[in-house]
Length: 411
Ligand code: PMP
Image (cartoon, rainbow, N blue to C red; front, top):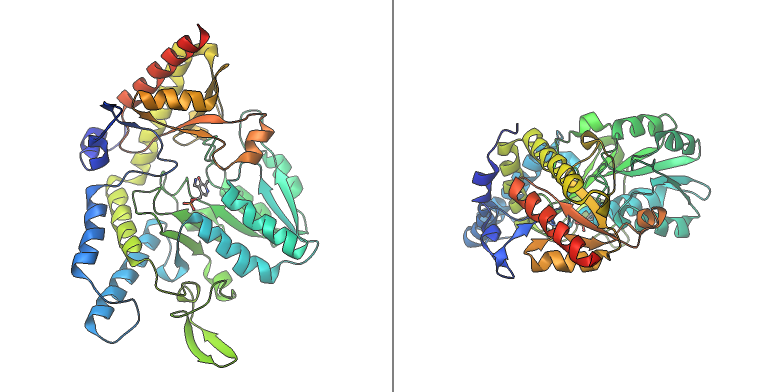
């Protein structure tokens, strides 16, 4: 039993009042981007209504007000993940955060012959920056596979980690399989050989309680827009001692203490990594989003999504049986609120378009995870993803529509 009423929550999300092709909107694409509650929309509007001035750019009161607001947002977001404010860098999103790690840390610390261990379930955002480094620095990438049940193969991972490993880059929750990875176990194996651990939290931080001290990783990346916040704002949490050793990957105004014609002294972290005018409206919106999520309670959000996933798996099995193939762990406790599937004999895009005409928004394709799809021998999947505003009726609408699509596809 979760601790909130999702029907009341729905009242806070104006987008749920719209229709799709004349039907009630069934929004099942929160893994791509979440809907926004009124309080977030209002916070952004009131920022532009009430505040003017740039961050850390002047002595006048207006500038100082904006600076305070931006730093309040940093503190609030840090608290949400059990961190301190000075360990949190605002970025443009998870992709930007992961690039920051690769270029700020990787470019200077990796040498030819070093190895980066990844998993086959990584999103491209946690693959391509490492591929770029591999070609620039002669670093070798090693991919760890999954079990038949869609879980990370920990035995293979522990075998892949060696004295040559300098980085282990891993997703906390797969954006395709929904699999939740045991980051702490991975971190302990990586740290035993002196490697750093980079966690892609784009799908976990919005949907479950994540505490950086519990994870024991070195970096955690996530995006605001997948957790009720605006687009264009993201976070990189970084362990303080690691961060202090890092040079900025983007340089410019605001990130310095002093500049000479041929040298510069960079500001302490996190400002060292935030050159240029930051996305203050984004930070303010994200602050409001994490306040909203904290009020609801992340344990409750996770439990609610797990209930919906359990219900969807049960209904799919009852109504479609062999006509549907679901990917990822059978044990719902090993996964989050992401359900990827295919209807047998039907193209994923055809299914997605048919669902769209029923008012149901899902994502189809390879979900920026080509390596995983190829490993599974798939050209794509249909992905339904849940959030705190989804209700059992959304699951029923999805399964009923899939049932009809499967039947009409067969005749
Ligand atoms: N990692 C994962 C697991 C994701 O699901 C996504 C978004 N689909 C990203 C990284 C990239 O996030 P963004 O596009 O917000 O940078």
